[in-house]
Image 1: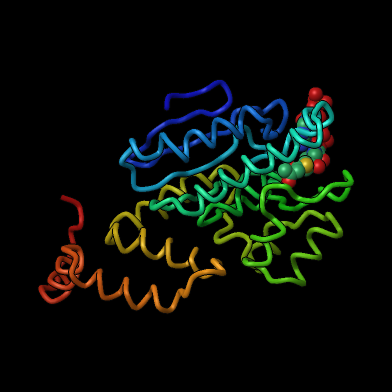
Image 2: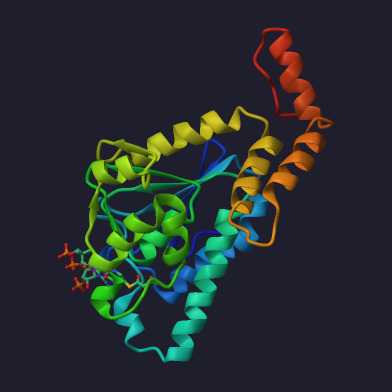
Length: 259
Ligand code: CAA
């Protein structure tokens, strides 16, 4: 998928950089932008053969300030529900992506924007990042998965604090709580995300994909993750990447997983 008006797609050293491109509305996620993201993660990503994806917002002020509130007021309850379902599909596709997705958060990541960041595997925030779920201010609840994903990340007490008070969490507190994996100076989030993906790309790609899959499986109520780990551990030991990784260790050289 090429660029769309609202979603800028570039490739930088085998990493796809997706930039939400509505700076005049603090990159608020309208239906078209959710549709573009959905198209990218459910169809286009496969064709990129990349080692990871960075998701960021245009401008220094916001990653994304939530769903588009101005569009909401034009929608029927049925349309709102359908949009929520589309957003959920998008977030599941991201969470289950075999390559790592890192959110690079400059400024606000609120509401649906925060939920988009929660569906990424890792989050790098600038010291000016502000995270939160202010939906109750609007008389609604989060609609893109925060009621489920936030407790997975920070537990029930902190999730209720964030979602009931609607307060914004500053970068240092977000780092302390594990909402952010790294905090860097303003303007440095994309570069840091790029370094993280580069580091991951030197590892066995099948093992990386399986770690993502297995950790996601922990939250699948219908699956026995321990059993799956045993099977996957055994299966990967027959993979050529395991052979390369172990031979490299024994020969005291760096493993070469590509090609
Ligand atoms: N939707 C639509 N437009 C938005 C927006 C949003 N979520 N957030 C900001 N904007 C627009 C503003 O209306 C404004 O547009 P105009 O210049 O045309 O007036 C522009 O972006 C700049 O915003 P502000 O002037 O408000 O900037 P600020 O610095 O004064 O405040 C802010 C920044 C605190 C983030 C404030 O914009 C804000 O509170 N935004 C809304 C945050 C929010 O409630 N998000 C949750 C949305 S609901 C949701 O996301 C549901 C879900 O889970 C799916």
